Length: 308
Ligand code: A2P
Image (cartoon, rainbow, N blue to C red; front, side, top):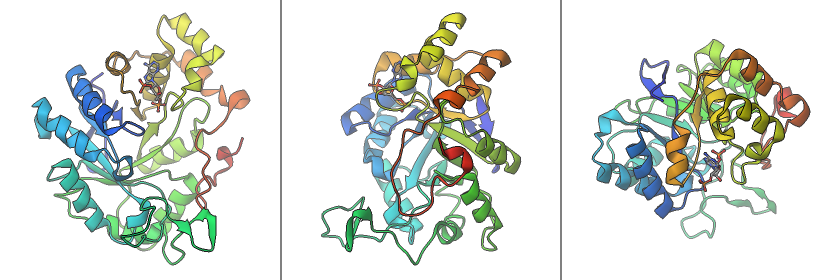
C-alpha cells in the first residue's frame, strides 16, 4: 500500500504505519527493519515506548534514506511544560535532526518527578497513590501554546493524540491556539469507531490516525465471528479486513506487529466496497467497547460516543 494522506502543512503522510507500542527494544529493532524491507515508510513511536533509540538504529542500518521516511514520536505527560527539551531528547535518542510529526501523547499533564523518584513515567499523587500525579496548574491548551511554537526544522508537523471531540473543540476555541493540529492519533477500530470524532476532524482538516486497529494485544477483533465472516466473504484475513476498513474511512492506520510475516501482510490491503465497510462500521452498536480504560484524573473520554 503506497496510499498517503495530506496533512494541513502540505506534507504527505503514508497511510499505513508500523506501530511500536508494546514492542520491546530488540523486537522494535528487528520489526522496523522488517517493515522497511516490506515497503513501510512510516514508523510510529513515542518517548514512553522506550524504543526510540532502537527505531533510529534500525533506520540507520536499513540504508533507507531518512528523507523518504515519515517518523512520528510523542511528548510524554511529564514534559508538558517543556516540549522543546523533550523533543530534543527524542531527536537525540532517534539519532535524527527532525521528526515528521510530533504529537502531544495525552491531554494529561503530570507533575515532573524529581530525578531520583522511582517512577519517572507514571508518577503517583503523594496524597493518593491510587491516582496519577496530575499537574493541576497546567492543561493541554497551555501545552499546545508551546508545542505550536516548536522549531519547524525539528518538528515538521505537530499534532495531538487521545483527544476527544470535546477536548479538540476546547483546544481550537482557545485564543492562544494559532495552529490547528495536523493529526489526532486515537484508539479506533470497529468496536470503537468514533464516527463523530472522525467527522469533526475531517471538517477541521485534522488527519485521524487509528491505533490498536486490530484490538491491541490479544486482538479480540481478530476472533470476532462477524469480522471473520466478513473477511471470509471477501477472501481476505480478518487483519486485512480491519486495516482496509481503516483506510476506507480515510484514516491513517497503525497496525503493530513484531512478527515479520504479519508485518509484510499488514501493508497489503484491499479496496473495500461500501456495503462491507458499512457493515463493519455498524458492529459497535452491539459490540461497542474501548480497550484502553485508564483513569487519567482529567477528562479524556468525554464524548457521548465514548460510552458503551
Ligand atoms: P505480534 O506483535 O506478536 O505479531 P494492534 O495493532 O491493534 O495494536 O494489534 C497488535 C496485536 O495484533 C499484536 O498482538 C500483534 O501480534 C497482533 N497482530 C498484528 N498483525 C497481525 C496479523 N496480521 N494477524 C494476526 N495478529 C496480528
